[in-house]
Length: 239
Picture 1 (spheres, helix red, strand yellow):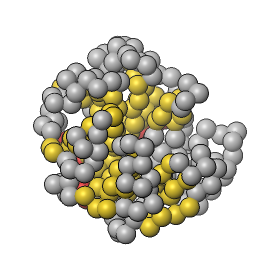
Picture 2: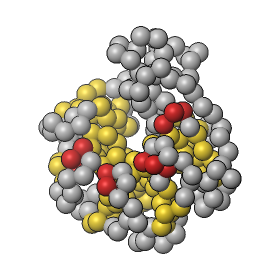
Picture 3: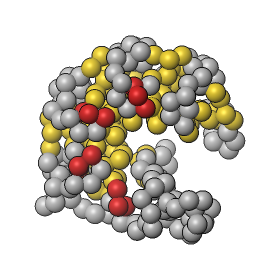
C-alpha cells in the first residue's frame, strides 16, 4: 500500500498505486509530504506546523503537536522509529518513536528547508531556499552548511548509493554530487538536465529512486491555469 497527499486530503492505495481513494484527514491545513515510519505507521506534514500520524496505513489519522507553527515540507524516516522533518525558517525536528513526539534540532540557517534524505543512520543532507545545503554526519544531532553557489530553491534531494547525491531545484535544475554533498558547488557540480517551463506555478520537485534503480523526478506540468499546453497528460513531454 501507499499514501499520497493533496491539500488537506490524503489519497491511499492498496494495490501498488494502480488505484487511489481519498481519505479525509480531518484537517483544513494543506499537507505537503508523507512517509512511512514503519509497516503501517505513516507520518504526514504540512503548513503551519501540521503533523499527522496514522497507525493503520493511512486509513485514519491523529494530529500530533510538533511544537512549531512553521510550515513543514520534507520527511526522512531512518528505521527504528527515528526520523527527521524539515521546514520553513531552518526548522529541523527529530523523532525517535515513529513520529509520536518531536523535538527541535538546531540548524545553522534560518532559510526555508524543503527536503531531507539520509544515506544511512549517520549521514544525511537537507536542502532548501537560496541553494541551501546542510549536512550531518552524526545521525542528525548536528548540522553544518555547505555552499553551493546557487541562488535557486532546491526542492528535493535523494541519495543514489552511499556517496552520490542528486538534488533538483527551480528552473528545472538538477545537480549531482559524488562525495555525499561535500562539494556540490559551481566548480564541481554536474548539471544533468534543465527543462524550460512557461509559468511559475504548478511546480513539482519531488525526487525518488525506485526499486528498479531508476531516478524519478516530478517537475510539475509547466504551469498556467488549467494546463493550457496539455503537458500533464502527454507522455512525450517531460513536464
